[in-house]
Length: 183
Length: 400
Image 1 (cartoon, rainbow over the protein chains, first blue to last red):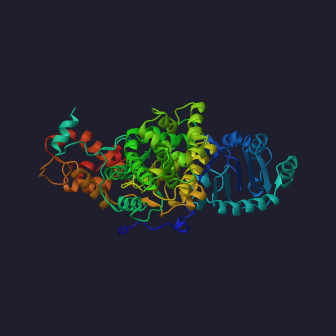
Image 2: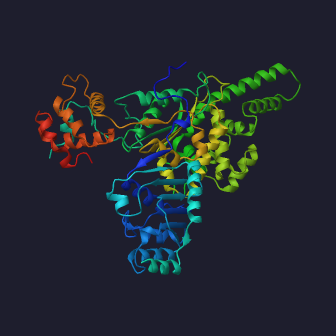
């Protein structure tokens, strides 16, 4: 019989790690790559706020989401906390543009979670952590996120995403009006 | 301008040592540095042999870009072919504009296996079938037509070799006998019209889908593996059939239909050929968790070994790699220092200055530029590359 060398142990897939820690820049690269994937079927993004001019692989996030929003089931939840601004401000305008492009935009009053989910027909990707979808969160801040591709993990995060959606309201004229009153 | 040949000669090399061997070149592959990775692969590759465990293996090898995965698969191919095995090295899964599993299987037959080699290997089985059938005819002493009886006994043996599809054994035996010209080979390579394929399939009772569908291609490749490795003839056509898939990270660039087709094909093939098959999948990944993002879960559950990582090198491993690669490319009877055309401290400085991640590819490219471009004239004049020479290494873009 053969003498077993190092590294040839029988498989035990439970020892294969299911997630990896990412900094903000790596998370940006991951999100950008997944937004470009041709088979993308569903996107779910939750972030305190969104910096639509954030450049992702030579294209700003707004353009990327607008492009995919029409063809991919894309949901974006942002926090009202991140929108304490005039309805005429750039962030509100960006959200309105995304909504017009087919992205389902929701507002959650106390949202602080950062959750990014991508689904193809048979493949998934999830990421959670501290990064918001902003230039600071995906570039200059010291952030910690984790990402994985395992379906069982994705299912858990997708359920959590649904619970966030249940606590949110779709972006509407009333959202703008309420914001104006808050201001 | 200094000629490369002059630098090779002045450096005491027989050939260019710092070379990234192109995908098509299998003959000049060498293994340098730490052997634990290649030993693990060779160990796993021997396991599906009949005199070992016989059970098929599905192995994954992963590491950074340039870490040596391709070299490992190609070196494995070279060693296995030297030992007489039938090996297909598939450089990447995206072989066509619209890659599907059935097209990859056709590619295995049309570009990786040679018809003459397959025929030579199966000739042993054909000879054995002929002798065995004759001996059974003789044992029976019946008054039937000897030709008819011989044919009956051959069919009986075909059923024993591949009970589910005895016609496929006959198909392969006719391929060896060249009974239908090269029609049977054309069937395997998919270079037939559907009508022609249908006629062949009907004649041998093979699935009419032939190589035209993923399911048909998987079935035929699995049957091929089983017949090729069947142990009734000694030795079999090949102890194990090896299919080595490189650059599997490219699966993520395909359409979802293409990716699924290939992943399901790999899974079904592994399910159908439970013995004497070795499947190796290599991919660029920064950590093992990325495997979940490239392969689907059912395939991951079929891995028969822990994924083999090809790690980055630390400076001492990088130095050992450089010494080994230079040593294996020296002129016969070379008497000089092992570090030449570097000085001892020059080689240390070279590996320490090379920007992370330290990979064989980066070392080879950097050494090529250092010795054969920047310091070529100095080396030809007999002065080695010294520590001071590479102090500004990062600035002249050598590590990129």
